[in-house]
Image (cartoon, rainbow, N blue to C red; front, side, top):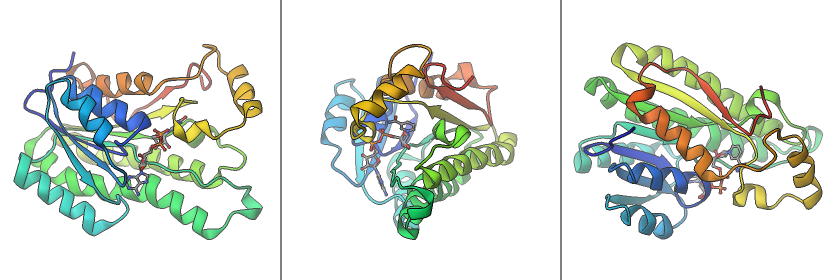
Amino acid sequence: MLDGHGQTAVVTGAARGIGRSIAVALAGTGMTVVGVDMASMEDTQEAAEATGSSFHSRIMNVTDPAQVQDLSLWCTQTLGGASVLVNNAGITRDNLLIRMKQEEWDAVLSVNLKAAFLLTQAFARSMMKARFGRIVNIASIIGLIGNAGQANYAAAKAGLIALTKSAAKELAPRNVTVNAVAPGFIETAMTAALSQEIREKYLRSIPLGRFGTPEDIANVVLFLCSPNAAYVTGHVITVDGGVVM
Ligand SMILES: NC(=O)c1ccc[n+]([C@@H]2O[C@H](COP(=O)([O-])OP(=O)(O)OC[C@H]3O[C@@H](n4cnc5c(N)ncnc54)[C@H](O)[C@@H]3O)[C@@H](O)[C@H]2O)c1
């Protein structure tokens, strides 16, 4: 079990969906949570504070290096740093490869991959100094198996998995673990836009016979941040009802 009292977590994309669920779950362990998003996090704040923990809302763009530096400095000065970083913010800009615009490619690579690099770099130093840290990157099974219409997203998530493994090797000597969670089809705003036909097609491919919930992902993130996962690093855990096995 994870007792988060005395620890601080930074969770990106915390306004809704999977990020909201992770932020509230970490707060439930007693952890102070810093939610990061471009959107308002009032709803997350309310749920996190209902657990009795502190929640700090930082409205910003994770792709902007200066804003990421400001966040890291603020965390150090105000909260004494962070021991947990969850890189969850992500976007999709789906299109067939031959039609994909450079802006669609760049936007997806920027939020899903570059931001995780910026945040890891900004927070790793203090974690290494403290000789303790837990970094969890929210990838996707699409980064493992690819998907028609998602070349940008698949490449970004595959890159995030490679970043996870390289960072895990660099930071392991200082007791900082870096792991990735690769969700399958999870019921959030990101997937709500899909047609009924596509949803039914996906459902048929899921051995456990249901779509995932944001809580299914948060539970695994909690495990990776807990002492039970102290010897787990550089790993990618698929949480997908058995699609990839
Ligand atoms: N929902 C799924 O089925 C699914 C499957 C696999 C992986 N994932 C991954 O899980 C993560 C969360 O997905 P979700 O379904 O909760 O998505 P979501 O769209 O519901 O939430 C994403 C959040 O990230 C925030 N965000 C986007 N760009 C940002 C930026 N530049 N700076 C700060 N915040 C930004 C958004 O405002 C939003 O609140 C993403 O990385 C996504 O790729 C989701």
